[in-house]
Length: 457
Image (cartoon, rainbow, N blue to C red; front, side):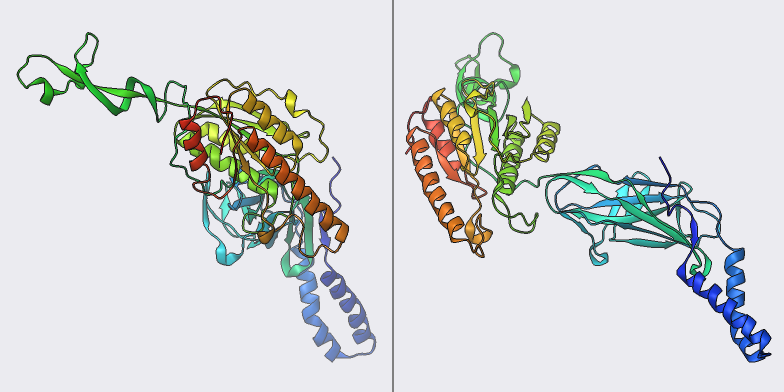
């Protein structure tokens, strides 16, 4: 790898002007016998001599790292440049190149971030005295960043530089190779008081219809061989009939929640975590919220991304680590512009008793075909409509000047309404994404019905 052409100590324009001024004024003063000009140029001669004597020689060694390799969108991360101090270098500086959906953290919003080596302060740029604090023999320059949208973000290249005495010689700016930062989606606000229908697992928080080891009281029954002594109900057993009674409970079970995220299209404009949300933003954040909710209940959650470019899959699992894995997978979703897959050939590996939650903008026919095929297999399917509301960001912006585009979009919306009515007639409920409580009604309705749902009103 050839060194960068700025990876050396070079004279600055200020030094060039200083040399030109001394070389021009000093001979004129000597030839014309003007001591006043010599007095005027003598400070410049002193500065020139000082700059030449104190010129740095060694080139600093440097390294670029990120304080975190993965953060949630809207979180803060440090881009850290560790530069080896060199003799006679007075100022070190670092700056980052701009990147989409990555913003700097202003000094007024900086916060302390603990890392393995100590405490660093996040900021948009950093310029420090070369004699300042040293970390493990190196000067640490930090730039505070905040990814505003989920996805893999390119951080860098990071530019580092240094300046010698009087600003006469400079090193850099030298670019350091960019690094990848994975911003996982921030789950939307979601909660549900309705239990998952038809639990079939062995452990969990959902009450089963059969008796077993659980936390919810079922009835009192006579003591049988094998019952645990801690289940003896002493108030009933000491009434004088000489028979022991124990408490029985309903078994606690879990369910398998198969989460499908439709990533065929990304409609609308994304303004980041604090701005307008595109259809894929709403789908990914809603999917993350649903997965987080059911994982907190002890259910098993699997993920399948319906996309021609990134057909990602996460098998069923539970626990906090599995939730991080799902968020990491959602951060790698890339929409497919051209549909190249047949949704009817997608096999999810699910069985009876699985709750299928599909999050989709309901614009791609493949997603609706997949939902209808799963419902015909007797699975409980819920479709969450995540299309962007035109009032808060719009799929077709209000400043759209092409009347043909507006007309075509109205026609497509009419076709979409017809397709939604058709899939509802096949027993697949379609609910809009409204945050907390979005799935309460349909989950209770599916729980009252049998596993094979053929109609829904």
